[in-house]
Image (cartoon, rainbow, N blue to C red; front, top):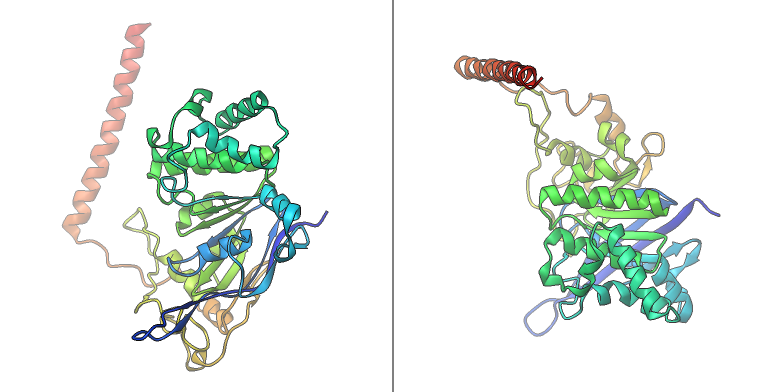
Length: 373
């Protein structure tokens, strides 16, 4: 069995918009020449700004929309040529978790019907009582109770609805699960629960996960490998820890430098990112990032960079990544200005007071324990 479970080769999706009497027709290059490989049993993340083509790429991988050109292979089979029962088998093996848990569930259907519908489609011979038992098992798997099967989506919170969506995706017994920003619409505390659930399900059920996201903290926590997209193209890919520790493409560096730092004293290089993201209907020539890149050279506007080796299992689409890396790590600029002396003094007093309060609290706890004995 091949190690590669999902592969995209030079995948493109162009949308034609506009037209009519007063509007000029344009072509939006939502995905433009993406190639990637997803290995069996891993979590592969695709990250980038809003509008870079992540969700369109996810739908192409699932064959929810047809590509303009290029191919997608699942277990070595070209999904574009599948029809009939072969296409139904693909739908069973590849499932999708949508971004919005509020609109992705039919409000007229109970949770039991929503989760059981894939069973009716892919296993019509299954008896009704066995189907109900399977639905109850799936609800327990995602952290819900079997009696929730009689309720409707509007009776649940956002995190619970996303769990229902995951249970529905798991009903057919898939081997690959694609999540289109599955936690972006949830509260931070609920995000952690859903992320941990997906991670546990991957290990327990032997799933392969493809996660679309723009939250880098989520990606670093749960992914094995990551691909960074900008304006319809992948600009960097590689093992997650390696990309986070030593980014090679300037766009990846900019994304990482934008992560807020919790400690005021940490000297972090803040790379400038000026201007707006260009329109995918009129992308810049050459390197698509050169109009906003802090390291751009004159020839970046005319030469299209190809993805090439930038380290062990790491690729980057930048002509000058070696020179940029030789200038030193992103996190080694001149340190930010130190706070004024009175601010530093107040901060030191606050830390001392906090430490004193902790010592007092520990002493009080010991005294209470002695009295109880």
